[in-house]
Image (cartoon, rainbow, N blue to C red; front, side, top):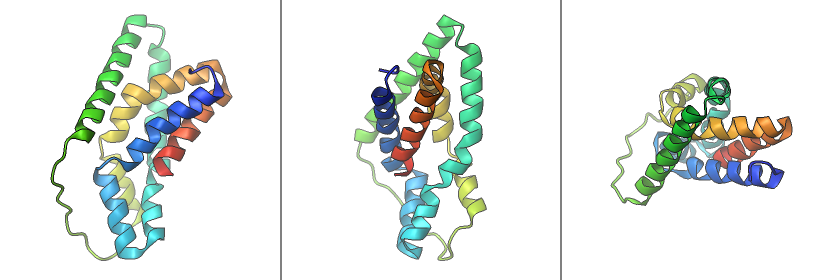
Amino acid sequence: MIDSLFGVLTIGFLLGAPAGIAPGPMLVLIISEAFRHGIRAGAKVAFIPLLTDLPIVLVSGILFAKLSNVDLLLGVISLAGAIFLTYLGSSSIKIASVEIPDYTPKPLHLRELMIANLVSPNPYLFWFTVGAPLMVRSFQQSFSLGAAFIFSFYLGLVG
């Protein structure tokens, strides 16, 4: 499925969209900023991963590309990614009470939003376990497939 444009676009979008709507700190920030300061402020928060994920994507992609010649390591990383996705899926099913902290009424600055995303473990966990293997395999097929994967993932994530 990684060797066709449709497959890569589908995989990228289906991994990005649930990540974009999964409960977590970024979703709470998006919703609270949108309610307090309007949809434009919420959209600003939603686009933060486009700025902060680039170093994570590059480092994870380079590391995975260097290590992709080691079949056993590749298998372990892929298995870890599958376990991580299973964990995320099962934890999404659980119902838990969510406490939303009271934020100050002023809009958050770009720097604060970037720090909030950089300290979140979610981008690191995704890119180092699931995203990098798929991205590298897509780029190994062709540059356009790799770019399509990244585009469709962030289209799903940011919306």
